[in-house]
Image (cartoon, rainbow, N blue to C red):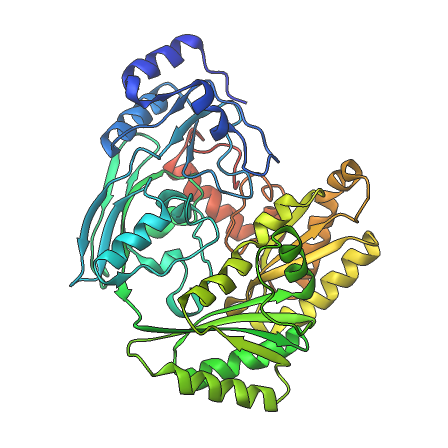
Length: 468
């Protein structure tokens, strides 16, 4: 924990200016992870209003050896945004849309712009910014860059790393690097932006970015399907990609227990199907012209039914029905938060073909370790990213269950390793997986990461104690 003197805090307040200082009831929500798993502490919370102000703050902090934790919308799930006695720097006031270029299919925005605002701004110009995640109303550009967020449309558009052309970064010593180029091709050395995308704020503070936009789809088809098993989902996914010619934009897997939990905590949501099944898939197709999808989707689902890959299904007849199906999927995290049991969250990825055997092996391991534990598995089947979350047994002692969280996470991660997967697909490492990371990566890779960290942040001031 940092030891920052009162005089240093006073000097930093004066430098930042009154508008940038966040205190009292406004600061309190920024110090606690939204599920309450981590409660942080900070001698000062600052929300600068420009990249130049961020640079001035970081130059002071570098000179005075003051550690800084950057924070976006505080929606992270691994504790990466929680200060531990460090200065907290919120990017919420970096909220400008700097430029939209519809002809060049780019949008330039500052780090504090909410994801939903990015989507709406692109749509207002007849373009699409495709990243979509459950927290899109509150998460912000800087946060989704620093965690390399993925979401539901990675299968067609890629994750955040694929959607960025250029970035602007304040380095740990206060230098401002403006790499805000809009070029699709720029082979002039190391592509430095990728050091900061996914870097969890440990190498610098992203203050703005140039994002890729896409044509706005004219037609969408959304379907909710009941499947006999997750294994059938693998066959269906491959079939849908082949038959749709790239039109498949989302393919979300949910187990029966996941759907039941969501409907239990959100009873106003309609059950999409009367049929119950071990697994469900929510899939969506996009096209640039009206009328292209109707025949394709019905033919595809008819053939899949004949092959016994699906048991039952429904296709949304209008936008309202499609939004209802997506609302069911996006309520998964909220449903777990509403449950009285603590939730052990494992954000993992495995090769797509390994998803069914991973689920089977992990379920068996969890049940053997804690009989009655409730696995809530759902996620982005199209890229092998499964949110494998576990609630304690109903009526069990939640304190005992919480105490075993680390043990359960390691157990699941052992199964992930056995299936050649990753212990973090899109949430990052933060505090939660920091100690485990070196045991899951080759020594050479960890050494390279430490070398980069030491080169850019030799005093360890950026988001200390996170990731490494």
